[in-house]
Image (tube, rainbow, N blue to C red; front, side):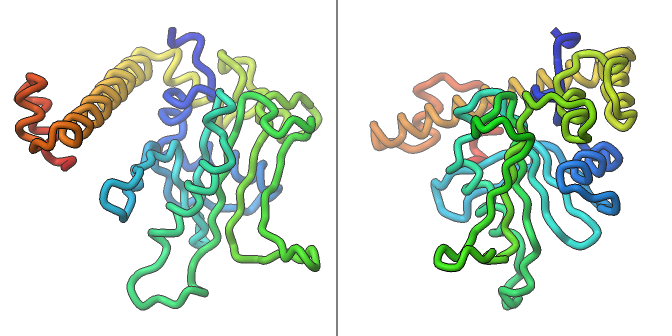
Length: 252
């Protein structure tokens, strides 16, 4: 199973990029057409909770911040449904919610980039990338509010183009076939070393357990709403284990 993983698989991608500044700098510089972008922080699977009670929470595949304070969210999406344009909008808005402290001026908000790397050509125009920017419709001028959304076509093939080589590497199952050393090294570690394979297996087990807890949490919420009972009563009715109960109670 591990042998077939690619960087287009989010479980594997998040392991490769978590706290990996070199790999993240490579990807961002290529996608943004730069050579000087410096990343200060990279966190995989960062949770953003809605400020609204009962609002939707999201988990970012990759969160990064550069030396200029700009914020980046990189997502990989194999299914077109996961790359819905409304999802990109929601991710962008959630990044904004943590940009400013109390009484900070609105103009101090940093630029943000939501980057969806999709397995298919989501926009269907055969281009390597699609840049979404707000414009003033009457003049065509950029609104320049600092919010940027980019869709990268994971099926794009052109070995003479840095984006094409990057997407080639994202599709590879073996490090030896990759162009970029910054991606080869972590892929080789997680696939070809005992320690890396052990880390990957443990991370997958933890991910599956988190997903199980989330499904259980939603079922409990539904039971509470339908039966008009407390969380404790709902968990008792569903025979939730003491271990799971200790985790779930913190979510209410």
